Image 1 (cartoon, rainbow, N blue to C red):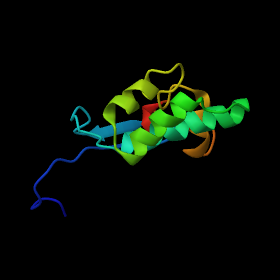
Image 2 (image 1 turned 180 degrees about the horizontal axis):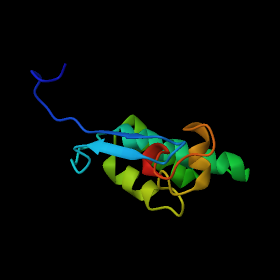
Image 3 (image 1 turned 120 degrees about the vertical axis):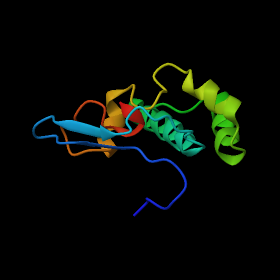
Length: 110
């Protein structure tokens, strides 16, 4: 299907029942563009929801800049917050899989 298309493709599949996994061009690196920004924000909001806390006004400003303006510096600042990295906190797995999630299968590679 993609044979005559320009570009690159990488695919990975895992069988949660057996733990068997395989990849095609698994070492290929890709720019994630801005989709990772949505993941950073989702993880941050989920963490605060589960902790019963609010984003600080500064973090709200960073999140707005990250999403509204695709601000990479704001994304980096939020990424470096404790536990803000997608996949770094067990709660990030709750929307990705039917438990138990195999390691590495949650959004963001957690």
